[in-house]
Image 1 (tube, one colour):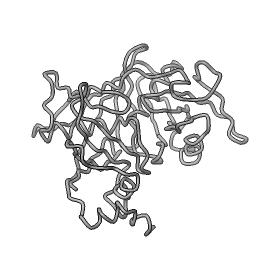
Image 2 (cartoon, rainbow, N blue to C red):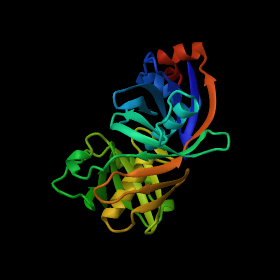
Image 3 (spheres, rainbow, N blue to C red):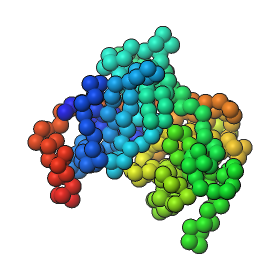
Length: 297
């Protein structure tokens, strides 16, 4: 099995090209590939499968714990770079390729290239945000859930909910460096009001054009960057009149630019980087498929 290791703002993935649709990604195999000590290592695994009528390729995204993800904003940039750089897809005249996801087909346009012609950054049309709590989904009688009060034990927090094809909860904080990402994040990720779980963003507004953000990702934990989380945070803060239409989102792994006006789709621009290519050892692969990597834990 050949693989590529790649990342978008340090949100890293094991990428498998499977345009013949032959690779079966079990949750056990995904966990083995994503294992940072016994496997290749990554926040998730992306299988690039054949597209359809509305997409050039399909992004089959799995979180590091083996669960299926509807959408991954950093991953979709990695996919676009991969298929263009490796000559698997010829972009349209405007530089766009269409990447199918479980949250619909996403147009991804090459924004910049390196001197050698390889893709440096791309702009993704992420589609419109879903704001109705039932569409996130989030269980509440609150029709807006802009600053929805949530009580966790003795603690009261206020949460904004947004779907970017996957569910997000966003908290406004004074300082992301001391925000309770690793304690509050997993509690909210699994809170029953999110029936499908959720990604939890801790957003610190700096001014109308910039925020800092840390994200606890569903099925992964805290990551260096989350593309859908960046988009969700900007939309949530816009609804509170804390940021403008174009926002630089500063994440631990780098900066993404998010542009959104009310009633429109969300545009996200950011880098994509290929790190290495390799071949998974055949014996290791068979052991991983049998779950033997987990039995050694």
